Length: 303
Image 1 (cartoon, rainbow, N blue to C red):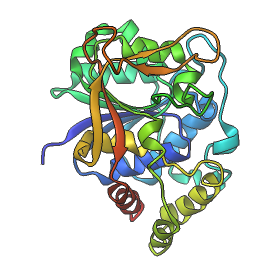
Image 2 (spheres, rainbow, N blue to C red):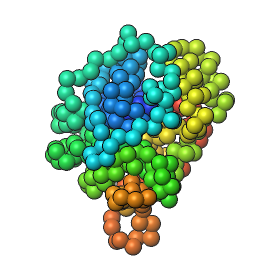
Image 3 (tube, rainbow, N blue to C red):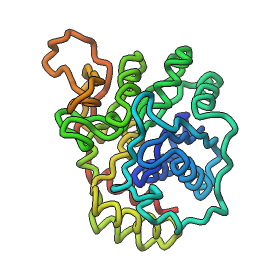
Image 4 (tube, helix red, strand yellow):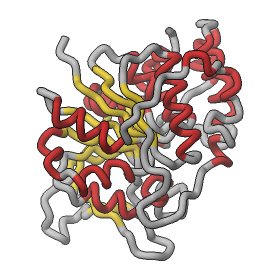
């Protein structure tokens, strides 16, 4: 089977963990690196959580520390949703004994190295703020031709969760999102329009409980805590959009990011009636087969 080289750029984060698990469960992927970014919690915790998951899963990949703050704004962690530790207060259930080694290179250096040395185009799954990727594309535009696509969990059309207009990842670093959406790289966007439909029920949680392994037991506990605040499991959509786009409804559209101060900062908007006469720059996902999604999540924790 031909494998897709994959970089996961993330801010673990409860649903980032599930995105990593889903990627690990997919034989189509060759996970090259997990790169942290400040977002759901601070950079030290997102990095630690990335090391933890890579170690627990025995992933033979690089783990690298990324940007500690957005390009312009100050960091605003989502601890009310993800807990102070990023794992809904459940991180202590995992032992640090298997912590994966941290690269001596920064996330941007690691991503550039992987891209430039790869014989195949590389996919990037971005499930946190786009800070690392924006800095990479700005500093090293030569990597653009090496990227198969950037599959993003972020944004939303006419919907927000950080503000009435803006989704958390884009609102956290709107300038980064703007840079990425104006980069010319192929983009895939799983925004709130689709991710709010990516939910789990008690049926799936009960199935996971039957596996009785450290990962499944702790994931059930984490999800149960997380779901009290946010029932949607957003980030795995960015993984599944790469391998299973036929399980989604999508349109190729022109998307732009608002970077102005004010209530619309970080808003992603689509030129739905072609007023701007711009060519599509993004594949926008709007719906997902819920049963497919739920089965993919359950399978990912049966380790």
